[in-house]
Amino acid sequence: MKQGRFITMEGVDGSGKTTQLQLTARYLLDCGYDVVTTREPGGTKMAERIRGLVLDADAAINARTEVMLYLAARAEHVETVIKPALAAGKVVLCDRFADSTLVYQGYVRGIEIAKVKALCAFAADSLQPELTILLDAAPEALLQRRADRGVRDRFEQEGLDFQKKVREGFLSLANSEPDRIKKVNALQNTEAVQADIQKLLKEAGF
Ligand code: TYD
Image (cartoon, rainbow, N blue to C red):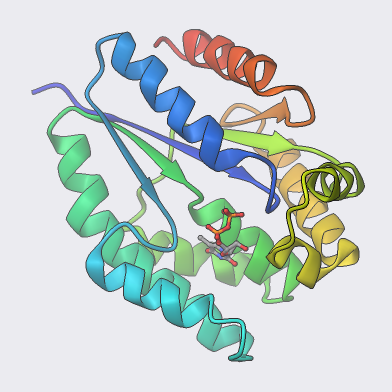
């Protein structure tokens, strides 16, 4: 039986990931692939409930509690959605995965990276994406872009220093795993970003 392929998309909040994920899914469908799009935290009924808990802005939670919630959601998502889709030969496109945990809970919140890595491997039963597209942009520029469009959301609430740290974390990960994590300039227009993504997919044999 043919084995599916697992691709993730990562980036700072507001980098246009969700739009690009949808465009990428459409492209792969047009290429004849069976595609499943999903997101983290979430992707299953239970994981979406955990998402509600963990993203609830009113609740300040301890960093260890937070990482466990993200990972509980992941374990459920991997077992009930991602693994079955891969076993059925599908392409799974996921909005965020373990790299987000390494960056947000590791680099930013300060939990030791080696520990977060081990926990991520446990939660995902060692499943890893073969390709990760990192939509990269300077947070200052994204903030300006959002202000121009009148968007006010968590990106602003968390502040520029937070987003800068997130970006640094992703860039550091990309440097340590250049074969898997591929950077795309997220400040280009939508079509140009998508063209870069399609180029990367072709290079990966799609
Ligand atoms: P979401 O609304 O999906 O943000 P975006 O559209 O920017 O992806 O919320 C996901 C948030 O959860 C985002 O701020 C990153 C965070 N997150 C973690 O902190 N750790 C994780 O393991 C994951 C998957 C997400």
